[in-house]
Image (cartoon, rainbow, N blue to C red; front, side, top):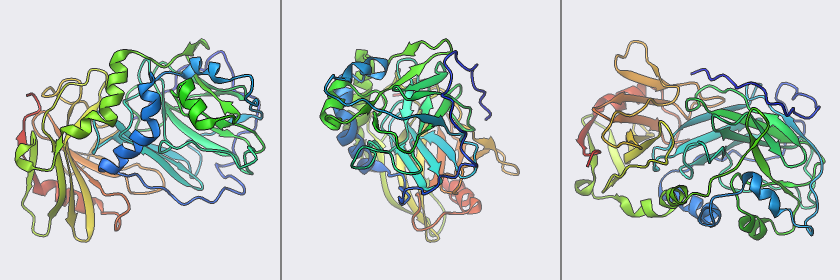
Length: 395
């Protein structure tokens, strides 16, 4: 799905060099971090982000007040990074193991970073979504960004045209294949020698004080096409939605198949279910964002020495209603009724195949990186062998 960028806002990027073919010299050594699934991932989100969400989920432009007089000023510059450059990329998709949320994987020359299941879709009031596992990416011990710089990749809501990175510069958004309809991405590099830590989107002043102490802080501000700041929302409804994503939804899941609202069966020799959980109750999530999907069942299967995620996805805003499309999934030639996402950059670990079953999607995806990536043929064989035996999404 091709997504076009909005007009460049009146604020302009700083006059810095464009990345040379996406290659960062002296890239920091960092092993690739794969996405995590299930309760462990949700627990990470709780630990890393619950504090600021309960404090109001606010920040954004208002977060500038966190620059206390005692805090050293960040210095340096930022530069635009094209996600179309070699060895760069961004992959997005619905969170198969989470609730009305999304997964992001950002690919960089030195590895990948990801977040999954902790945030609703970007939307008015939630203009930026980070792709960094919920961790703060810090400069070196002396506060100086190392050779090669530090890269940041984020998803933006439709009304965002650029992002102001503290006092270091402003970076425009860019179109990237596979994003939710209307959304864009923003990618930038805090250049070598800069001093300051980029604050995660939406962090409140209290969260910043607690986690960044007296470090130089770089506050992100989303801007519309006229250069006006777009603040994060602090509405009660959105705060409650954050809370449900992180805490309350854990109580809604069951591993007892008979108690779940959704269930599947399989009829392929050698295809074995290793774990499964399903929702005991399905409630509408009006603040999930347009087109959001949520899983009412998530299971892990083994087949031919590979592992697979299986999910039943329903309309998050109107459970029981027709679900929206899986982002960038295209009809698979020669396989009527099957859609697939196959464009994941740099790695095959994000391939998804799915088919409609009533008012739901039955989805098969690899269990990332363990013990190896299934072929498209194996994905399709598993999908064909699965059958939805219970779908009570409208109750």
